[in-house]
Length: 469
Image (cartoon, rainbow, N blue to C red):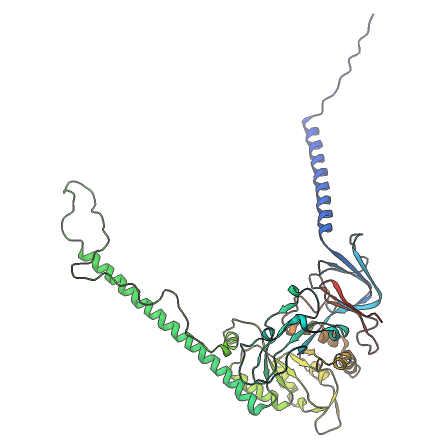
């Protein structure tokens, strides 16, 4: 007797088949995501800085930290960060990394000349050949950018911010940084500034009057046209219709025709678009500031208490102008202690040179930066000139005012974040945090140690200068 054994194969249920397909699709998606991530990372250029100390400015200083840079921008800052194995690693474990500095009053490589009066339409960008300027000394002392300014007195023109290295297309950072205004010779500078503000307001009023007259003419012509059209329609509606009385069809409206002996309506004599009258171009940027069409500030240069008082007196002509001040003390003594409360009240951002002077006509030491900060003023540091010795001593004199009472955190902001903010670049520069440009300097010690030196400079994520000694 033959025994037959039936082997039954169980078919998967529809639910099982659905889960199998879903699992396969999820695995495919995961693999695609991994492949996409790998491709994206392959397309991006990763650089990692392993630093002994990172002065972020935006937060706490980080010891034994890392900075991950992707395509010239900071991506991550911290410790034990993740990054691709193929990333370029810069070993700075014995160095301090901080944001690069901006020289906010530079004439490096620009021609020497003298001009006076009102020239707010003149731009420093029109007088330079950037590729011919040697910024090696600026890089040596940690300046990754400079604000080049026009020379002269009165309102000599507009300044602009440039990187001190890098590809040409990335060098210009801020085309309209600030309008320079001298106020250290109040006998001539004060009437020039007052006259410039009044002239700018006159030009604004002239344009406004012309626009009002144009609008009135346009309205009058439009009303006249409407009246002519209405008159033509009422004059052409008499007589019977073309259809019979029983046709039931409404008469067709015809466009108004001119009556015998009547001329057709004349086209408007006033242009459809307003054309402003010619204005004094030398005052146009100042007009834009008054009308809030531009954001760049005026930077008034003062050196004494009387300069400050005269400057604020002129600004009564237009109190809402965006204003900053450069407090350039010409000698080892000054009388600016008289106007500390006024400067604090006005909350005017101040550009100062970091050094200790004395009160005028006395031997009393006067730490101007510390006094300004103590009174609530927003201070930014600038070296006295482009001379190598001036830039070399810049951090050392900053250390002097810190030892004499200025808080360290305020001093470091005055060297970094406040410099960027002074020229409207704080969204890109001044701190080490996600999204900022990787314009950094590497020092062999603390930033406020007079013996420390800049060892490397990075601009846009690339090392552009290195100390080979």
